[in-house]
Each structure stands twice: as structure tokens, then as C-alpha cells.
Length: 230
Image (cartoon, rainbow, N blue to C red; front, side, top):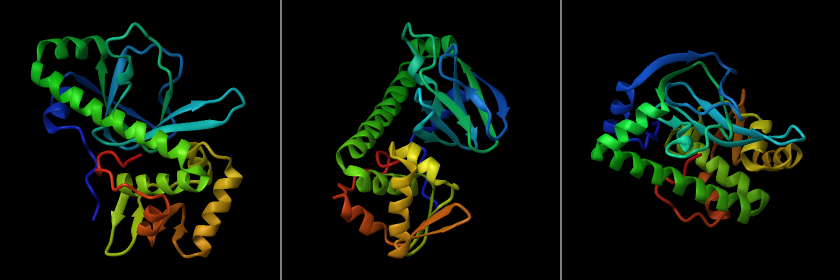
């Protein structure tokens, strides 16, 4: 069973589609990059992308991942800031609905219902990000990794009776970017999990066999599913 992770209401999705223009991107290509003009938003229609920043020394930090029915580039709405503060790269072949910033702002001014739905969705996004940052900062290296694996399972997991397989291939480099850790630290912790048979990895796909053990290890608060995602 794959859990449904889209928290965007169907009314909001359909409203955004009506003012969007379809566009496709190849795997590995950039939808937009840091420092470019932020005059469009991107409704992900299919595929997966990562939101990232690169440090001056070349280290990649992954802010979050997004998939179908997610919206990226929304931080530029109703602000004077006209440049993107992060980059978005396609992890797979991606189809988006390209939305002009000015057009969406006009629609939000015009429709109270649309504004209400949009603000609710933004609130969920903000709570999710705040809780993730808390875990990364306060739970130590092990807790940061365990929290990330749990969130990946909630976002991209195929759940069986006992196991959950994250149906998005992920590398040690990706996990390092998601947790803000060095690759060596991530590699060591993942090796320990494999040796204890808590996880297995097959062609980049991680299967978690004891997800409750990961939850217990970080004193998981059993947050609502819409908050405990990547």
C-alpha cells in the first residue's frame, strides 16, 4: 500500500491547473536555479524534484523533496524579493504546470475560497519544515538520519504488513544532503542499520524492516502524517 501524501486540496490543485501552462523537464535538469528571477511557480503534475542549495565549498544541502500535486517557488508570492533563494532539480522526468506569479496573486485577491485553501496548505508546509529542522538540529546525527528515513517512508513508502520500501532510489550523498551530515557519518550509520538488519538496500531502494524501532530511538511524537514528511 502506498500512502497518499498530497496535502493540497483537490479544489486548490484544479484551480492552479486552470491558470497553468504545461511544461516538461528531463531527469537532472533544473526547473530554476538560485539567483534567477522568480516570476513563476511550478505545480508538479508528475515526477519528483529536489529543492536544494549549494554552499560556497560545493556541498549540496537538500531542503526538501516534492512530487505530484506539490507546488514549488511559492516563497516569492506577495514579496518584493524577485530572485529564487534555492534551486529545484528534476530527480525523474517531470511535468509541471507553469504559473505566472502575477496571475496567481490576482486570483488569490479575487477568490476568498482559493486564498483560504492556499493559506491552509502553506501552514501545513511551514509546520512540516519547522519540525524537520527541529529534528535535524536537536536529535543528533543518529536522530537526524532516523527522522529523515521515517519521513522518506511516509512520503514515498510502499507499506507492507511489517516492512516499508522507499520507492525513490536514494544515495549516501542524497542522505547527507537531506541531513546536513558528512557522507562518512551517514555511511557509517547506514552500515550499522544494515548489520542489525533494521534496513536492507537493493539497487538504491531502502527497505525499513523495523520502523517502530527508529521511531522509538528518537522519541517519535507520532505527529500527524501531513507533518511527518520530507
